[in-house]
Amino acid sequence: MVGPEIEQLILYLSKLPGLGPRSARRAALYILKRRESLLLPLANALEITAKNIKTCETCGNLDSVNPCTICNDLKRDKNSLCIVEEVADLWAIERSGAYSGKYHVLGGLLSPLDGIGP
Figure 1 (cartoon, rainbow, N blue to C red):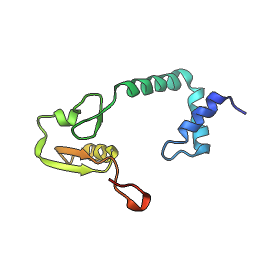
Figure 2 (figure 1 turned 60 degrees about the vertical axis):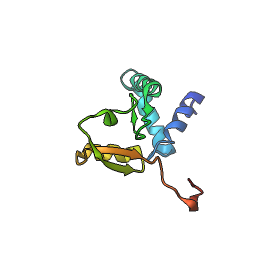
Figure 3 (figure 1 turned 90 degrees about the vertical axis):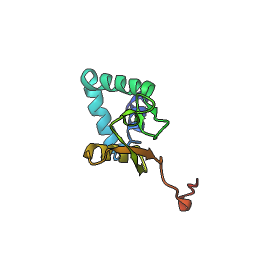
Figure 4 (figure 1 turned 60 degrees about the horizontal axis):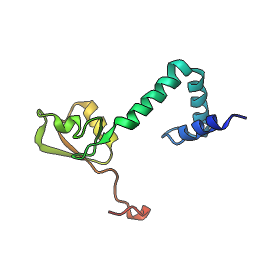
């Protein structure tokens, strides 16, 4: 049996993609065993991220500045627009280096069968 603080950590970790309850429990134990080298820096990074990251009002990307670094980049092709479903798609395209235009993040797709409308 573990305390409520650890159970809460496990609960939140289990909400991450790819982590079920058992994986979240293993991840929590790993983090807790590395308090100084992992837990405290991770907690600090999460706090800083929560305070500083904004959604770009121009394209929908996540960044610490608004408009984001991509929208502020004068070298970007202003005549090319890539429409993506999620920020993860934008990041994947950026990592590839294959595109140098602007973006628009939809933030999800419409799915009437799932009750997701405009």
